Image (cartoon, rainbow, N blue to C red; front, top):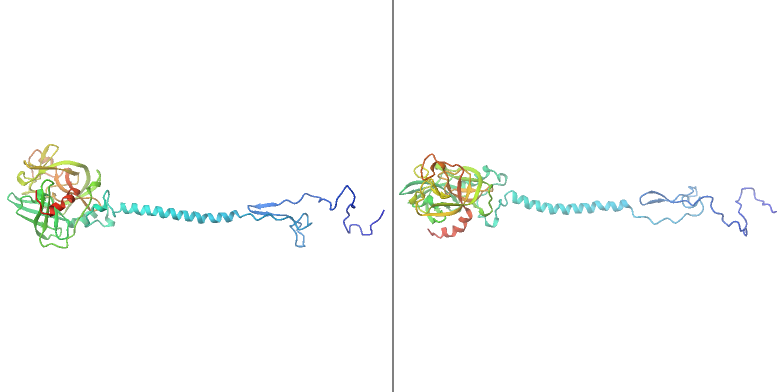
Length: 374
């Protein structure tokens, strides 16, 4: 035997080459270290932790360690991009919703009226944005455009109302208010009085156009669109009932397309909005006559029915929507105490009034301005 001259334990001993029972180097006394996952995207390989600076790299300190796996993309990195994309999507959605909301708000707050096509509106005085939808706001905006009309004829004196539609004094009223008049006086909301002349009349539609002499710079009403009104819409009526200038009442649209029949001339007493303090404002509805005899020469039109209080003297005044647009010309009212052809100074509104749709007036304006009379 050959003895080793090295001190015991100085060098490790291995089986010699050629020994079929072992190979060099000997297998490790333990299983190779396995990677340790400490969290998403992070892997740690254990080592000997030696002081030579190569710890953590091999099997129990032998060698330089296994190859490290390729770094995995950080999930946190991917997630960091998502809020940016999410914010961009939210911003786009907000812009779309904002545009729709602005359109809706614009329609609701009076840049357009309920059921009104802006292309069919004749511009004039309208309700301020802060007062849109209130009776007080409508009254403040529109009252300066409503006038009291006093007409003198062989039958006496009558009082009615009218609506200023041009700054130089064109005024729309009912034909029956000025029919047969030899002189016409108009009083503005300011109390100033003008003399007026008849420009044109249309007895078939119970409409008339008069013009003030020497007027200028007047506030004008806005003619709206009566095709879009609905039953239940809130309305305001302004006129001079019983000579009380600038009286404001309110109500709703009660019905549409009512067949109302009125006299075409003053022979039946229909020529007066209010005559001699009485209530001669006769018309026919449903086959019955109210407020007196309409006579033999009559005309029938489709009317807006309202429960806004109307009384003698309101004839020719305005029925107005809540955006301050004229949707009708008040023309008749039902008085239960004067039905059946009787007349009573105690007659008054019972919530059944009628107005000529403003679209009827708008289609007739050119004819009235041309001076045609019927």
